[in-house]
Length: 612
Image (cartoon, rainbow, N blue to C red; front, side):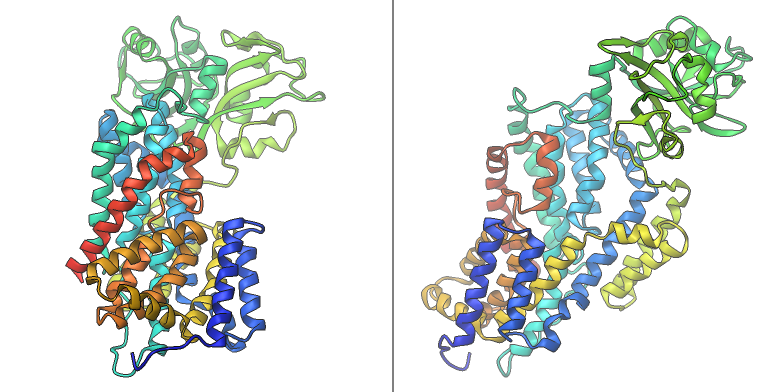
């Protein structure tokens, strides 16, 4: 630095605004996006940021990259990619719990290198719930390892989380205020941080494999088992239990030539929910549909009962779903409840007379009336107002008929159109976006938007659906806080803070300064969110590195990684998403998160110095 800086009026004013920002985020008097908007307006009124640059954040590379990643993620979700991910995890783990935790964390964490952390967790929540229901393992054993490994996996690329996306913009902005003679800072390529992020990610996998999972297992006395999952709920309330199996009608089977209704009336018969024959795959096939040789049946029932039924009727039981996997994708079909209102056309008719499979594409499983639950031979039961029907069916068919008001669906289900037939379009254009960013020498937002546009043009997702997929709250927080980072840097406040810090810490070795920076960034993230911590800490880290004659890139990267290091508080959206379904309390996050936070800080400093 050319000389000692003195605290100017503009520096003091921007520090006051920074204090206001911290208070608004910590006290939560208003939502985070409103708080960020207040900060933006104050910066404009005080003219700490020129008006012609005040709204640059909304057109920044960081904002456009996050927007594109959200649309790409929605396209993958719309085509049922996550259903395939659930099946892959189960095959990979072979049903063993320790392997299951590792496999789920590996898959979700790897995906998080390409998508925003909260979006990945939201996509994998139903995957984890489905796996927990099928295996019987507590959901609390799966969600925290998965969520934390998603956070760690987000550090493997420059688009995995908000701090990494924001880092390149802050590096470029810092060039305007570098002292004369200092080398300009260049943005990091898409996977420049892969070795560092991979080290952090594998540390997290090992942490839960050998330590974290044991702590979670020790708390089984109070953590819920598979809370909120459809399968556990319907088993507890209605006694509908078992798994879905795939049965093939072989030559000589006694079911050949019989209808589905007749097959279901045999002793010990499972519920037939789907079939595949020469007419294709159908969920909730009509009861008068005849079974033929090579017909594949999707049946729901207890394992022992289904195996006995298969042996007795000449059916082959597949070890896992293959031909009917897509039909039972939770994004495509599932179990629901519906109440019959007064005035419904169902009233006064038996379940059999309603022909629910043929007319509505749903298979009746049970009926409740008051405290009575009917599961056996429900076709003969006459429907009355207030009855609750339980059925299995496809979500598109259910959404198509729900508006007729003959029944009111009370179970939440995906009402948006699913497009499994567009799966390969989604995967291809998702890959194109990242390949263009990696090898095409295009700016990151341009490359990612190319993939998003490809999905829009091929019908993977519509423009209206793309608008809904974007978290405008995240966009506003990021776009409004970017000018705060510019003000901290442009006024010299970042350089002044770094100068004062260096006056006290100048005798420390570089690695100790970096470790202190990593921990301070983590504390800032807990108080003012990942975005706020990145905007605050990266400019200060660059100036601290210049004062210590160290690498600004190293210090800036450590600050951004530190802003990602929040496993303790709800200011991390991942923690907010998993805390309810997993039944976690604050002390659970503390017991598991504190050691992980310290390991993250130590390893990030070591890995950055080793790689860069």
